[in-house]
Image (cartoon, rainbow, N blue to C red; front, top):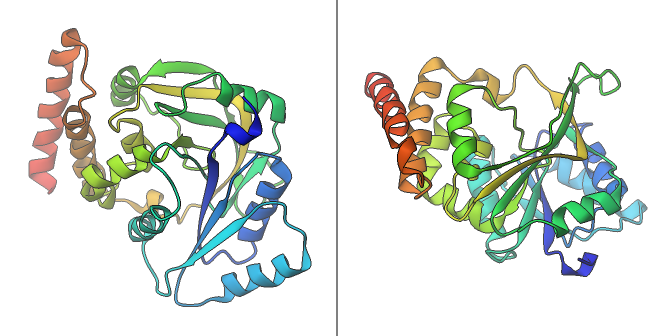
Length: 279
């Protein structure tokens, strides 16, 4: 598949980016990934980050095309996600492919031929891709504290049941998925996400997604922050969101193997009980 065949764009939500977000943009520029557009969403009452971007952009010859949105007010992560989705609907088709990047993470330049081959040899309309992660603290990107990588291609159903039994490491940054998955997950699980359900996992069980692909063709540098919204969630938030995750799997028509029905309904009942206590 040639580069021109890809309708692949990147989305970068930014909130109080400070000194971090321009390095995320530089990593996009250096990656050589053929993005059709890069969508920047600046979240906050202040436009300092936006003005900084405009100033640097005027001084440099960026190779990518940038589309900029501004919330003009402070939104939490879910509200900002909804704002970004509303804007993207004006630019993307349902079968467009989206690459997500957080403003405190970086793309490590891939071997571009291998990366293109990965996308070329898989069905982009029904597959979600997760890269490998080189994790560090966001105040020291030079010291890698752990590496998370694997090469595994599994069905959405297998991913779901595996996620109920073990912690599957996923991150928004470097995640690649068809835009229709985001539209569907937002429509059916917005309340769940507002209570702490993982964005990545909810998107993976969207209608029309058949395959989850963990690969090593792209490495992401993940700047971890102990004060991130995800790490501040309460036990109550986790219990409520767990129920929505399990319920959405059935609602989205992803339970396809009859023999797995008893296991599914066990987890549904278990998480429904937790939901009744903590809702």
